[in-house]
Image 1 (cartoon, rainbow, N blue to C red):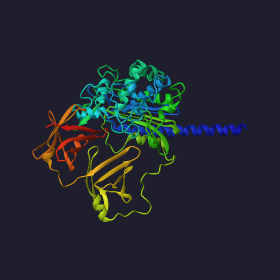
Image 2 (cartoon, rainbow, N blue to C red; image 1 turned 45 degrees about the vertical axis):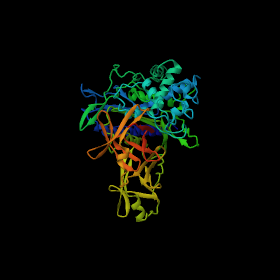
Image 3 (cartoon, rainbow, N blue to C red; image 1 turned 30 degrees about the vertical axis):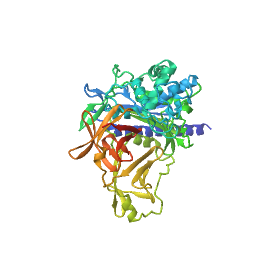
Image 4 (cartoon, one colour; image 1 turned 180 degrees about the vertical axis):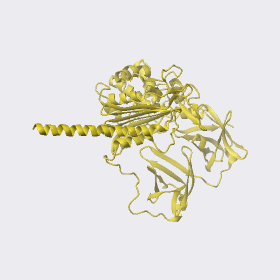
Length: 541
């Protein structure tokens, strides 16, 4: 018996040593991967926890290039939209205290808003199904994009209150809009009698041990150890700071170690009495019963066959990601003060995930995968699909025929149906005539329109247009033979004519559709951007 116990002890010790060596090897690989953050350039932080323990936490690069201050684990970065989950968490605490209801009409707390055909609920703000236009998009149309003015939440409420219509009927679609979470921040303040910053500090940050976390509700306030944000301009780094006081949608100042503490706090059932974990990760359903997989400031999905809860963030030059794989009890937090690797081929966070996931999990079946027997599309059908297509929201895409196959550049597209071709994680669908849709469930659905070589009678559209919702005007004019959308004093945006009454403005990522009288006179155009639809500009001269 004693001999058997001795053998078991040796075996367990051996397994422990092997695991420790394996973990150390993994962490060494992470060190090597993140060496692309050079010591004299903007940097990042990365923290990992497994089974409730912090197993890795490091920082690279510079927090402040001007003063040559290195990034450390205690440097304060901004978390962008990772912040949204904390705003939602504050709302759930107030609901638990019976101070508000998730199905309440938001006009109970925000009477400044217009009375729309259908009421908007607090729950619809949380799940991005309210239909409210994104205030940042509106301010961009007004000629003052975010960070060019010191916007605060009162300004946001004013902008949203000017909107006479919605993107969609509340509860029918997911359309991401920062307006939702700024309004939630205002509701928290009006219901609790405390600002969102004060309320979350008392009821969330301090209980969770997040001693390095606060909100950017006053961008002029001195924040000890704050990392400055940067963007690259023609190879030269320049400061790129979010100089505004609007928050709740973003604006969380924190560290990766504090974000890990938050993940452990609410996943271990410590947030709320009783625990509000289920509320935070609960998904929603649209009015038609279909699933909306956006939880409370969290995307809830599957990755590598595992449950995957995450949100990314981007504000000015700051970038962020907070992830959780519940079945592995694994949390990953990343913060950066630069967008320098936004377009890099390798996503380091995904590579870190793979190191821990390995090949032991069930792989997901790829969507729109090609069948065993290849589909052959008739050549004349491919000719109808070929050509240049334009989206005001996402840009342009050109299809050509290569060796009797449809291609984008040098990449041949594999057909999955007669009208559908796989591309990346999604597919291009040519079901509708003269347009193609890029579909990548659950959220991505972009429509591109085929550019018609037959141009419209341009003179009809020239003139000045004004929007009472945006409080701004645009002039459509011809200059040196080029059709431009002009905004005073000096913004000129080239226009692409798609076909009659349908223009696009790539620099604004905007789609313009014109309305005419029966006699052919142009009366207005409606502009649509990614997060704000059908904003009317009436022709005034």
